Image (cartoon, rainbow, N blue to C red; front, side, top):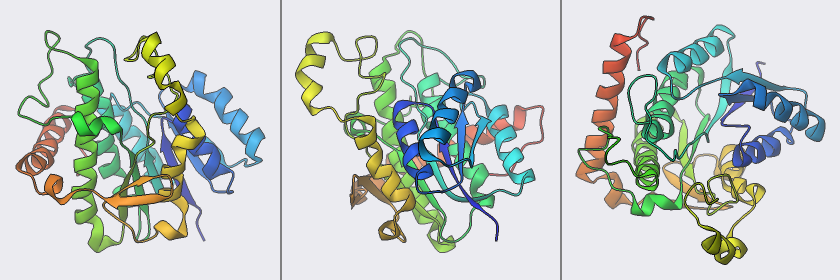
Length: 289
C-alpha cells in the first residue's frame, strides 16, 4: 500500500512548523513545501530530531511563481505521490507593494491565487477521503471583495487591507470548492488559528508596541494556533466534514450568505479566468485546472 502524504505549505514558519510537528509526531509522512530551502533545512532537521519521524521531506515551492507551482505539482506526480491531506498554510503580508512573478499584487498573489492554483493542480493526486485544509484569519470579517480585487496598485496599497481581502477570498473559495469536490468525497475546510504570536504580530507589520502589550495576554502560541488545522487534517472526528471553519476542536459552517453572495460567484469565476490567462502565456506546457 502506497504511503499517503501530508503536504504543508509554509511549513518553516511559526504556525506551519507547529502544524508540521504535530502531524509528524503522529508518525505521518510529511512534505514541507517551502520557498527558502536554506532557512527551511534546519527546521526540517529539528523536526526530525524532535519527533523521531525521518519521513519528513523538504521540497521547494514559491507560491509567487506559477512556474514553481507547476514544477512542484509535476514532481509529486512523477514520484507517484498520493496525498492524504493538503494544508494550505503559507501566507504573507507585505509592508510595501510588490508583484509576483506573474504580475499579481504579492499578498493576493501568494495567499490566494497561488494557493488556488496549487490546490487545483494537486487534485489529481487525491482520492475519496483526502482532505484540504486552508488557513484563514479573523481578518476575513473585515475583508471586502469587489471589482478591484485583482487590480492592485502601488498608489493605493494598504497591507492590512490586502491581507484581509486575501483571507476572505480563501474562505469563500474554500466553501465553493467544498461543494465542487463533495461528489468526489474530498473534504475541504478552513482553519482559523485566532490571533497567534507570529512575525506578523510585530511593529513592522500591523501592531504597535503599546497595542502589542495590551493584546499580548490574548495572543495564542503557534502550537495553540495550529490545533484547528491539525484536527481538521488528521482527526477521525473531522472525516466527512466539509465546507466548515475549524477553530481548535470545534467547527462551524461557512455562512450561507457568504457562499451564495454575488461576489462569491464572481470571485470563483474570475479566479479561474485570471489563472487560465497567465497559464496560457507561460513557456511551459499549460496544465488543465
